Length: 378
Image (cartoon, rainbow, N blue to C red; front, side, top):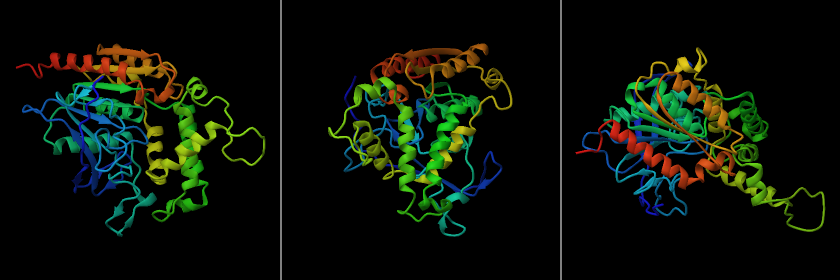
């Protein structure tokens, strides 16, 4: 795999100053989307790919910010010669509305009162996130994107693009995702939310900047991270290793896995907002492509689109059977679908780790979509 990076990049901001009506029928008077782009938009404006991020991700998918020690969250997948080859494609990644990394969300300033929205920010859904992304695509002067791709919550957004804007997208790559949350998936999200709301510093969502429910948010992240791994990956990484030989009920970080989870929780509170965590997990739980019809009917208005659906064998948070249900519904509509289940011990996190196999699959799939649509052939 190519080791080339796109180098130093800067975050951009799209400001939409008109009102939009959300799925809840609430009105958002204006919004801002933080986004990044990599590569060059073709003269025909037909090589754009939208990368959609997962729950704890953001617009910084690749490259480096000035002075950063780590690159974007999908650095190994985006860049020259990589799966999403920036020598061929124009890559866009935006932070979702409801988020906390530059896009409008609970921590943003409400211009009506000049204070943070907090829980006065309207309820947002995956559909609302995609609607805002479509307005960004308009702003960039792109009529139709070549592909929408993403893992986990990002895969939900990619699927929603196909349902909401079937005439504006040529292909879709949902990875380690689902068309709706099961009761188990909702339960995990609710435990995370309750841990935040049980923290006295949450204060009904009205906590001051820099003084929020850090303990509750850290626990929510710890719970989430357990579901992202697998039994095998945890055993291989930590086992039952103790940091000291003596037993003692001091409830410190005695086992290696305890220290790891606390580290993940502590690092998460440095970069994420608790109210945004509540909003985005609720949006994930509300997501349901077959709310008003069967899943096959939900895709019935899609006439000509290619799909590459990727799942991972050890992913127990978004198990492969959920991806297979999407495949079945798409095939019932006669759509071109490729399904690949990658054997991996990394659990749900595999979509952020199994770069080599993902790259081979995605590279060939995108080349196929390009040929089919006569793009890039002079």
